[in-house]
Length: 368
Image (cartoon, rainbow, N blue to C red; front, side, top):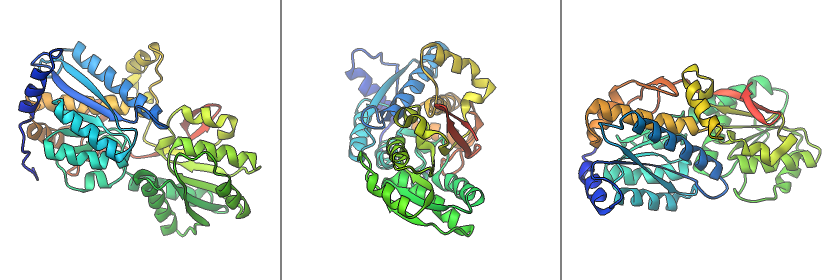
């Protein structure tokens, strides 16, 4: 361990449990946190669905270490300051594990709280390399990294759009700028010459100035480091100006809400994302369970479920929810989850298949 945690996690959990009459003393408190409200709330809904089902299934099978799990849900709205506040709330509630957060800009500052207070964190979605590069022993992720995603996307752009002018656009966030920069770096390394590099402000509704500039520059491909809300609006506004420019982006487009924004204008959009766990035969019964409840386990639903599974298996292997013991189990074990079998490297990054290309067509996405 690189850091001696100053609090006994079990002591914190017990103290918190004693202050909440509705929670039995032996219950184990875990949490998920992400954008439950705001423009990225569809991703928060994915995380909440995955965590709730994981807790329900674990409890039905006897819980963890013979004790029931209780789930707390935090809303950080993908805001860094709110994420820190949520992290502190979870400390006060006695949470021993966080399956979160979603946005890298939230996960990175929140991780400092979890490191200080001795709480295991496994993000299902935050891809900025900085999250696991900063040396905190208690921080992990079950998704890939932007430098991995950027390498795949940059190579794809160079090999498939060599005759097109490519614009690289980012939304100034830790995730969006990091992904756009990593993709552009790979594209340039392979000999590509970006035609444009611009930043946008997330949350705006009118991107016609950017669209007009791309039209004047004859941009054939726009690579976006950002989220589905902005990407969807830009695609619509490109089509309104008669542009057939292809949008290529990353894993923040893995929500059906993207098509709700674009409609047919989103046809042909390309994106990188980790292998779709819904296609894993082992996951078939769970996928059907979600669908029977009217929930499509898209995007990060199963990644959140898998994060909870990994922590639970590590706690059972360690025979304890003590942070140091669980961290040791996470770093030494292999976990059999809905995402398949995987382990973590010394930094806390998952050793699993990286990124593949997807295409949006007729309202859904699938492998290219």
